[in-house]
Length: 412
Length: 225
Image 1 (cartoon, helix red, strand yellow):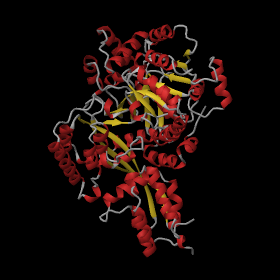
Image 2 (cartoon, each protein chain N blue to C red; image 1 turned 120 degrees about the horizontal axis):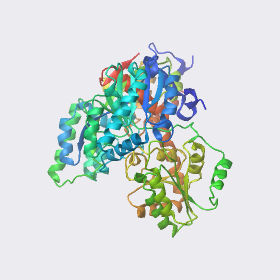
Image 3 (tube, each protein chain N blue to C red; image 1 turned 180 degrees about the vertical axis):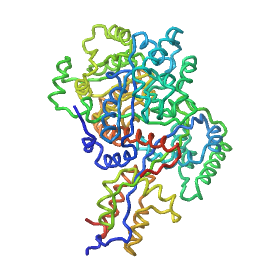
Image 4 (cartoon, rainbow over the protein chains, first blue to last red; image 1 turned 60 degrees about the vertical axis):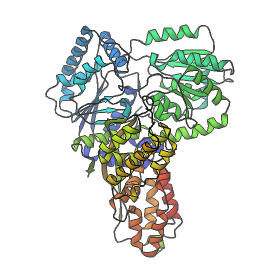
C-alpha cells in the first residue's frame, strides 16, 4: 500500500510533517541510496520499505539497492554478525575471500547507482566493503550499523575496521554501540511505522480470528514473544520462564518467529525451541512468513503482555511495537531494550528466566497497573520512536555532513 | 480592536531546530573518571548533557533533568551527589565553561567526602555526547498575541526548545523569545512575560512545557481566543 508523508499527520501531528518539509528543502533533488542485504525479513528492511518512499515524497531522489549473496556469503556475514556481538567466532580465510568477492561483484552491479549519489547509506556489515571497490565515488558515504558492536570479537573487528574507517560517518542506534573510528559517529534510534500492517489499528474481530486460528484459548492470558529464532533472543529462556509462571497462572505462550534470507542459523534454533516445548499444548511455536505483518500485529494485540528476553539486542523494535500497542514488556537487560523498558512505567527489565517469571505473575495480577503502563507506553512511542522522528534525524545528519560537520548549521 | 488583536511592530518569526547526536567515544565508569572527563570534553558536551538532551528520544518521566545528576543517581547510586548536581543551574552561570567548573567542584567535594566510589556495571557507563543542531525558519509568523497563542500548539517541540529553552542562552537578559516579544506590548505584555517566567521548563517535557505556555496565554485577555 502506498503511503504519503501527510498520512502520518494523525499519528505524529501535522506540525511534525510541516517541519520535515521545511527541513528537507535544501535536500530536494539530491540523490540518496540505501544499501542492505535483504528486501524482506528483519527490522532494517521494514524501515527502508517506508523511509525510502518518504524521502522521495520530500523531493529527494531516493533509492534502495540490495547486495545479492550466495548461501556461503550469508554464512560468513552471519558469523560477522555473531562476532560483532561478542561471540568468539571467526570466518575462515576462504569466507573472508567470499565476503570481499561478493562486495566486489556488488560494486560492479549496483556501483553505477552509487557512484554518482550525493549520499549513500550502507546498512550493516554485509555490503560495507562495496566502498573499497568504488574508488570513483562522488558523494558522502555513511555506514549505518544496526547491531551492537560495543564488545566485538577482536579478530573480526580488526578485519572490519579498515573497511568502515574510510566512510564519512557512521550511525549507531545507541551511544553504547559505537566503536572508535576516525569520522563522526552519529546516534540515531530506529523507529516503527504506525501506518504499516504490523502497527496499524485492527478490528477486535480480526485479532480474535487470528488467535482462534492458532488455537489460543480466549479465556486465558497470553504471553507473546515476537522475534527471529536466534540464540540471542533467548527463546529457550522464555519457555523456562513460562514454565515457572505456569505453576501459578493458566497462561499460554506464543513464540512467533520468522526467517530472514540472511540468517542461516534460524533452523537450528527453531529445532531447539521445538524440543524444549516438548508436548505442551499451551506453548505455540509459530513460524510465519516474512510478510505476515498483520498476523503478528494481531498476536501482539492479543497478548496480555509481551516478552523480549534478549541476551543481546540491537535496538529491539519488537519492544517498540508492543509498547505502541499498549502492552507492558518484560525485557532482557540488553541493547536498546533498556532505553524503552522502564521499570514500573512501561514494563520490567529482567536478567533471568526466574526474574521474567516473577514479573509475569506481578503484571498478570495487576490489571490496573497494566492499564496505566499501557497509556504511558503509547505516549512514549508517539513522542520518541515513530518513523517521522527517524526521518527527521536522517535529514539532520545529511544536512550536518553536507555543511562540513559544524555544531550549528543554518539552512534556508 | 480586541486586546489580543493589537499588532506588534515586528512579527514573531517561528523558528525550529533539529538535533543530531554525535558520540565523543569518551566514557566514565566511576566518579574519578567522571571528574577527569568533565575537565577534558569539549564544552559543547556539557551543554548537550544539560539542555540539548531535552530533544533526545528518551523516557520523559525522569527525576533529574541533567544527565550528570541522573547518571549519578541511577547508575552510581549516589543520591547526595545527584541532588547537588541537579541544582546547578546554567542560567546562574556566566557560560558553560563556568557550568563545567561548578560540576567539577561538586564532584571533587564528593570525592573528598567519600573516595570509595566503585565502577558501575558494564554497559552502564556515562557516555559523553555532543550535539549538531540544524536551525531553520518555519515561515510561520504571528503579529498579535492571539495569533501567537493559536500557532503555539501547532509548533514542534524543536521550536519550543529553540524559543523557550535555548533562547535564554542567546539573550543578554536570559529570557525566552516569547517573553521578549510580548514585552513589546507594554505593561500587559510584561505581565504576560512574567507569567511565562514561572513555567519551569526543567520539570517538564517540551510538549508539556508548550501546553503550560499556552495556558499562560489563555489566562490573558490578550491571548484569549
